Length: 270
Image 1: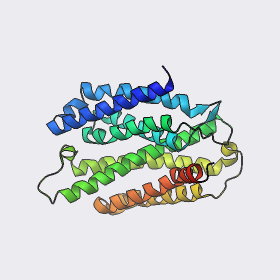
Image 2 (image 1 turned 120 degrees about the horizontal axis):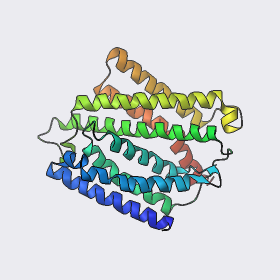
Image 3 (image 1 turned 180 degrees about the vertical axis):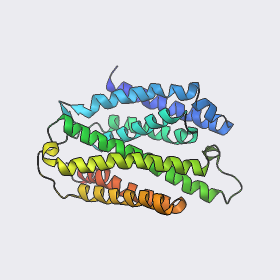
């Protein structure tokens, strides 16, 4: 089967599962479905998506990490985390929201197949550094989604009822606990990524550390998440304060890589 056919098949499976999750959400039994056959079925497009990523991330021994491939990797990791955590947390509503995005992410590389080979020579240290950063991005993507949902639910509590897709979300306290656990793990990975980039820049990238937009935004996002975790630990920050800091850190993190890549690839054609 060709890559184009696999992209189409993976897109279709994600999309069908998204519809089934949405219907289960409307019927009020999405959580049971997510822990049963429907949730287990997510492994099929997830595995296909993983194979497509493996097949396209490495080209001629070099790492291919253009904008659409980075987005696809981040959303694959997001679905994987939700799939693994479904037995520990009621995440069916979040799965319902992320599956359509994962479907779109599998279609983008087929629509925009141009490779963006990173200029650095491929090496185990370099690949580990970059893929570790992508894992951190994925976790902060989940954190941003959680923060947005917490904010939306808090506002909707003043209304008569929530939309159907939001009715079976975990309690706000559970959402906040999960939010800070995800941020904590993501911050650890981001710290390792930033530290390795600073300490071993010449070994990883082949040149001394350079102060670029990516470096600046990456450091700012690290500081924002560090302040948020300290504020939560020592001052009990939560609710709107936690949401604002999470969203701010996520925006800087997106600008650090995805924003830079968007300008380079779309406007400067590099």
